[in-house]
Each structure stands twice: as structure tokens, then as C-alpha cells.
Amino acid sequence: MIKHYTHGIQHIGLPTNDMEATLAFYRILGFEVVHEKEIDCRVCFLKLDSLVIEVYENKQALLKPGAIDHIAIDCTDIEACYHENVKAGLSPTSIEALPFWEKGVRFFKITGPNHETIEFCQIL
Figure 1 (cartoon, rainbow, N blue to C red):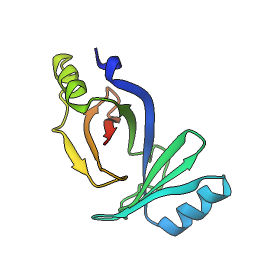
Figure 2: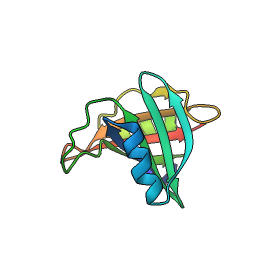
Figure 3: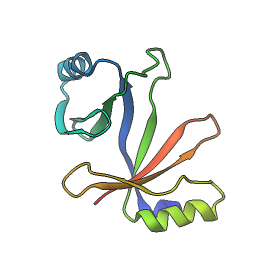
Figure 4: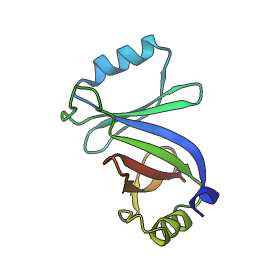
């Protein structure tokens, strides 16, 4: 069962065309930058209490309602969760890794019935 390997929402992914304006806005709301990395683009993780937003400057933000890119579910065992998704017939993408946080992350994605992207993410 997929639920055995998840803890709830880990973060919400939000593309931006202007990182500085986005950071200034979320700082007004009380968010703090808790992690920042440059890979293919600048990525910042902003935190307010238990809410984390991953903001990445990809210059492709839609700038209209519905612009959230993905909802990430915190995962305790990415391999087991992946296999449960396959077993459930959900067609996950392959497991990928990125050098976020101290030891990196591993994640995969599925698409929901409304074309929403759900990411399962394990911080290593």
C-alpha cells in the first residue's frame, strides 16, 4: 500500500520567471529560504512553519491561475513506494536523483486524472 511509505505533503513546486520578486513576495508572508541550489536553473526552498515551497526560475511560468507545477509527497522508501505505484497501475516515471539538501533527493512522478503532477520524493 502506497500510504505505508508516505508522510503527507513534502513541498509544492512553483515555477517563476523572476526569482527575486518571488522571494521578496514570500518573505513578506513570513517564508524563509532554507535551501538554495543552482543546477539547470536557480532553485530555492522556502519554508513557513511546516509548509515548504520549491521555487525554480525556469522562465516558463504560466503567470495565470493553475501555475503550480507539482505537489510532492514525502516518501520514506522511494523504491518500495515506486513498486507500489507500479502495482497500482499508476505508470510512474523512472526514479531520478538531484543534489538538493545535504545528501540529495530521489523522486518519481505520476499524473493524476486532472493532469496534475504528483511527485513522490525522499530526502536522503
